[in-house]
Amino acid sequence: MDFDFSDDQQQLRDAVHRWVDKGYGFERRRAIVAAGGFDRRVWNELAELGLTSLTVPEAHGGLGQGAVDAMVALEELGRGIVLEPLAQAFIATRVLADHASQAVQTEWLPRIASGEALVVLAHQERKARYRLDVCEAKAAQTQAGHAVTAIKSIVPAGDQADAFIVPAQLDGRIALFLVERGAAGVAAAGYATQDSSRAAEVMFKDAPATLVTTDGLAALELAADVGIASTCAYAVGAMEETLRLTTEYMNQRKQFGVPIASFQALRHRAADMKMQLELARSMSYYAGLKLGEAPDERRRALSRAKVQLGQSMRFMGQQSVQLHGGIGVTDEYVGSHYFKVLTQLEMCWGDTLHHLGEVSGRMQETAGVFA
Image (cartoon, rainbow, N blue to C red; front, side, top):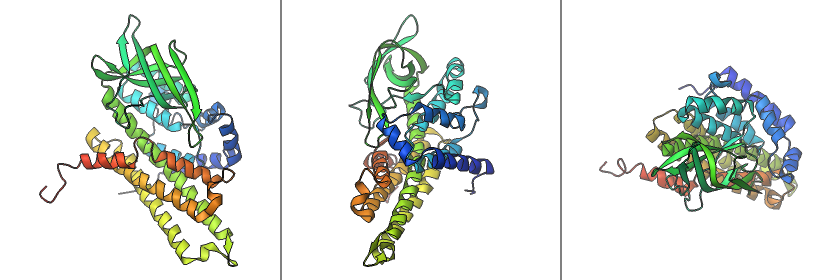
């Protein structure tokens, strides 16, 4: 199996790497955090790089690339812990391209590709925990189409987005709808999350909605799997930079007149961090490659990936703090922000224990000595 990246993918990585280094330094990120955690100018810069159009089909003005290309871009954005939610563009693109009518695709995919429209998934509800099949939101048919009534939590950039993909109950089953933020009956209350990105509680009260698909659970599972794969790729970039910062600090910090990197016990801990990074990287590749599989196999694979990534993220973040000492948790030091990002990512799309249960539940037919 060939794990080498193509020339085009390497050029994409280099382009995003350069932008992160030169255009998204720590001070700019701090300024964006102080302003609320989302900057439309940065979103437009991502669009100019071609990232919002990366996976949009060519027929709708996109580049028509696949999951591996998205993974490459997200790894580099994770290295700079970029706040703007590019993964949401990949999620919306995949859901609309696979499940929406041609009319909906024609209206929205070109706008996503150009960066004009930030479309985000608004699916989390307070009682759902991490289950996708728990949905209390309601939709009803109207003379003009449909209307949605719902309260959705922790919606990425929810008070800045241009539209939402919303699951809601329609005739006894989950369907997906597209609702514009400026529509009547939509209200969003934004706030900063633990990693300083922006989210919102979004309320829909008989809000006019466009039906995306009546096969909403299958489409929502696909959206979640794209989200998991995106999280895995972004986390690999964040962990890679965490390791770099940690080893750099170990080579600079002196104790007893020598760098602490010379202490064998600490070198072993750094080696363990490197091992966890490479385990995470391999499972991130696995997640990206499995996005094209049949739903059952795809869901199993993405849960497996999230278990390993969750373990690696927690280990990397905690070891980095331990090896830095007190400076590792100060707001002024960039490393503490990577720790917060990794801590939050471990809980996104289902934490490690949730996905361990998912993996276990999907192994029942093959588990045990008599299988």
